[in-house]
Amino acid sequence: MSKLIQAVGIVLEKKGYTGLSIANIASTAGVDRKLISVYFGSVDNLIGTYIKNKDYWVAATDAAEETLAKSSGVSSRLFLENLLLEQIDQFTLNEEMQKVVLWQISEKSDIMSHVTQTREKMSALFFPYSDKELAGKDVDLRAVSSLLVAGIYYLVLHTKTTDSTFCEINLTTEEGINRIKDAVKFILKQTYGVK
Image 1 (spheres, rainbow, N blue to C red):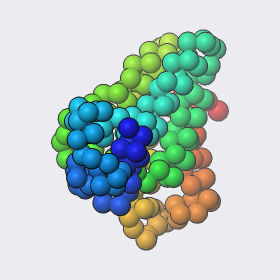
Image 2: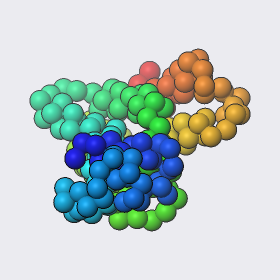
Image 3: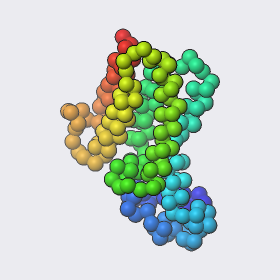
Image 4: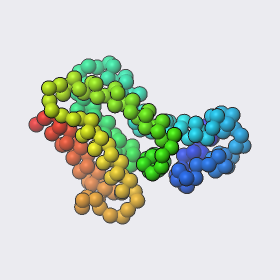
């Protein structure tokens, strides 16, 4: 099973999502293709298993459940800030997930639909928590968060596929990444009305 799961990542990295065929995965794993059906039922279930094990937001949701349940005193702004800064670091390093996100926005599929629904569990945990903190303020944190998450995805993908700067920021340097991180912090402070 682990060979097949690892093979998904290898195929994804080398051939992209279009290369995720039963034949390519089984060949890369060095096992009989029938084992995909035996262990996972289908290639889609195998790919879904791989993505859930690698997806930053799935792991972050598990950690969030524990953190938010234990402490009602956690600042939702700092919690969200940490999530987004970690998203930048994790997504920058994880080339397989970069290809998964490209797949997600390029082609409609049941696998990606299920993955995005799993990611939305974080929203169901976090936003009711933040709503209490922002009660009475005219703030659409869901919209702000959407722009930040999507912007992070785009900036990382842009940097990986082009040799250009973005708004004159070189995102291949630590200085460039830190400028983006500082902007995320600034936007959240402004959103929450923190000075």
